[in-house]
Length: 409
Image 1 (cartoon, rainbow, N blue to C red):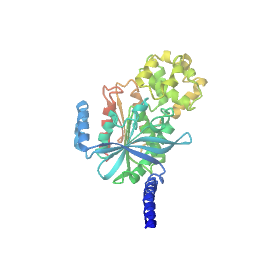
Image 2: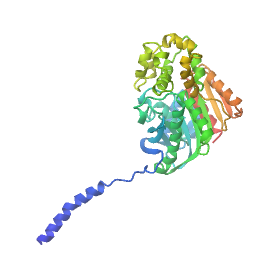
Image 3: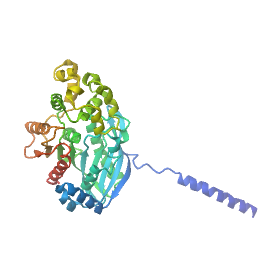
Image 4: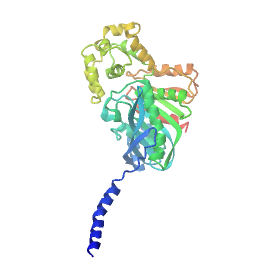
């Protein structure tokens, strides 16, 4: 009897230990075999009724959106993801948003490239419910898998300076996110199928990024991604032209753009000139501290000056286009510009006629260069948004792009 009691007590003592060992057993990593997708987190869930309410609210401001309510098919689930990419030869983990319809189906990708942002708190994964991203949630609810890369310098890579308007890293970041989404529907959203069809759209910095990504896909990755159509809004496609235009002005209203380019190109050795070669004091000394992710565009503008002669060194203004001292700057801007090519897929350029931040000539010239290089004038189009400035053109440009895409779905 005593022996039986001892055995019983021993079993009782062992049960919690066995349970503890069982509970502490590691679950297999669902992402372990992936090449690109590292992790995902569900951030938001919205119902179909939520989507209809959102689009009706937006239609009060932009009546052209009114018909979109009838196109909403489902609610959406919003995920933040981390994925493998590289920067200047080094492996790095980047991040972005993936917005998927909440009902099973086979969906194409819509890759949205963000416009200029200087705040970590406004990055897609940091603010998935930000107003601009709510509109993209509505787009997803009409039958797209929408992806938005954070860009390097934001989200998972907030510890590094954003390589603003650096073509190679921008393209790599977006392409690797596209690859990661191919693994997403295998690991996370197993009830949906993400097709190889994709649509590309972006505005401002995002317009430039979108065209750069399209060029890379058509030249090197056409077997992996089937681009159905692309819309580029108000992008600074020719940075050399843009720079020459700006330094020929007396005043430029968005010095934040100018400091951003120089800060990135100087930080990452895209040219060897120090900021003091280009900018007057005190601006040369201020610029590095202004692009740390904690200052808005408005705050940065207030710390710079709209006066071109006040902002830039006189020698840079007169010598940029020909002086050997600025050869590195000229080469860097040229290397990160986009040249025309014979485009295989439908392409729409959109630009507001009253845009004095990124002038309409940049889109008009880019369109003309594409046609001159052999693009089909029936499918490579340029549409102007009459009377709209840079900010006012954002939503109308996206609407124009979505309408353009309908012809190719």
